[in-house]
Image 1 (cartoon, rainbow, N blue to C red):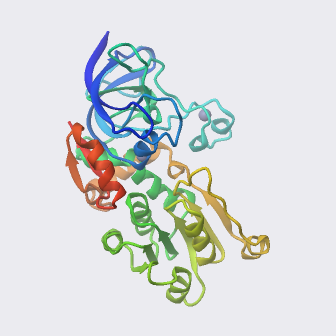
Image 2: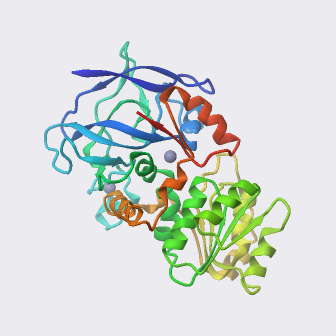
Image 3: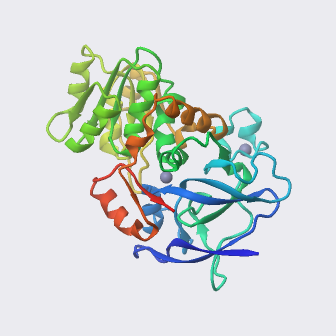
Length: 361
Ligand SMILES: [Zn+2]
Ligand SMILES: [Zn+2]
């Protein structure tokens, strides 16, 4: 049986999204049907709408979500109806070459639901990041539904499913920030500020937020930046060196995804420091660096995919830290909106007015 619900669809490249009726099948083997309670509006949804990810229109958008398991299909043992879950776009397969090497956060065959959600006329919808949660119900692989403490507010919890996890994980999992480290984060939107919060949680001593927008630098301070630099007026590399005894930071996190800001991160770190790229570049971007500097500065140049997270390990932990008052997830929720306001939320995001708009159901 299919369930008819309202969902946000991107029908054609660059066209505004629309709210339409979506048919969501009942769960088959290894699938779970989740009643969505909240879903954040992420840049990746906008990238889908712009055709910047794939050309498989129409898309059912939404992927930073939390909700209650409604039904499960045969063979499902990790969740039961009534469980409060965060949806993950990484559900490690357990059998690919990466899972078998004990690195499931690099899984190359992450699981998704086998059945498709469709338009009323039967047109299959491509679910954003294998989720599609700007809808009252979402069908996912059961492994994508990660059970967490139901005391968490759904609006805040859902954000851990994507952007906030990416930032927290860039600092904690990819960079391995630890007590006493100095960290710079370039780009203080949702992901960058989550990296700042992650660096603070991990015990960093100096945390420098860099952005061109004073409003975002103000947010950075609230999340734990000890210093901020407006790189529109100040050379961030020199300013970061000045704040670190002339040396640069142990860890520079690039949360923009542009060659200029990556170059800043590269030169702003201390010898043998680490650069982590968590901002997502676009296909035409290129970078040129003196190879002798790449060699001579040593250290590590890393990329962070989804914060190198293992959802079953990391989501419950971050929700517990939030419930203990040690991680301010609520601060990422700039506003709550209804399903028909997603297009408007994209424009607010483009103008940098919000960290996250969150659709509530
Ligand atoms: Zn795998
Ligand atoms: Zn996202």
